[in-house]
Image 1: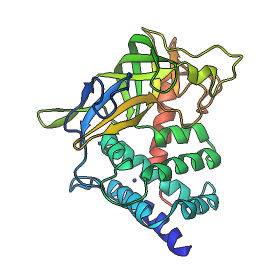
Image 2 (image 1 turned 90 degrees about the vertical axis):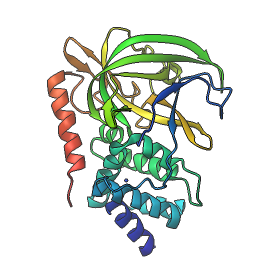
Image 3 (image 1 turned 45 degrees about the vertical axis):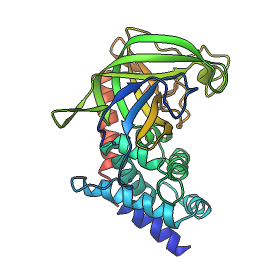
Length: 305
């Protein structure tokens, strides 16, 4: 057990090279899928080490690779059960945040990679997010910050409503938005060999998430509105992969159990958080909100035991 503890702590303390970004039609490896999909080149190396990555990111990948090859899920879960909001947990938060932020697409490819024998990173990743929800004094804020791939202020340009019957009849929303400000991550495309932020993003969500999910059924269903601005925490989710490509979609982040799926409207210059999930207030000036969010991000990224 001491060996497992050593692997987890050292691995975490020692966690995406997008060659193209396109909106695909139907993924060839998932022909029945009707929703939004992005296509990108799969990573060649797993973990996706490169000589230019920051040391903290290298350590993060090394940590997860060590976990997936040396620590089974039961031992990892037992280790997490013994943690409080302590130096170990906060150090793990630091490295996981930085690893996802550095290149979200590479992290997605790595988390679901299956080209060599090891356990899936998926369970280590979401097991840790659940632990942060249990122990952090700011649970929804911290879980959303760490687990999201992109956090941005966006303006909603269009909303297309349709029924997605790939798994069950579900009322889906395909949203096109303009990105005005980025707090975490990028939506990268190659332009003269440089990563730049694409000012336009498409993502999807379902109103059944609110009528049958996290929100009290007596409340009105949350809906985005065209022409309005929001702070949104995004997550990338794998759809399928073939021999050389990965296909994924973009959702608002739901793993923190936010009542609005981490989508917060900006009304009259104030960020509206009806249940004060993030801890900044139910209606807070956008500048104060930005400062609070940035300060918390810096606190996580710069934590030193």
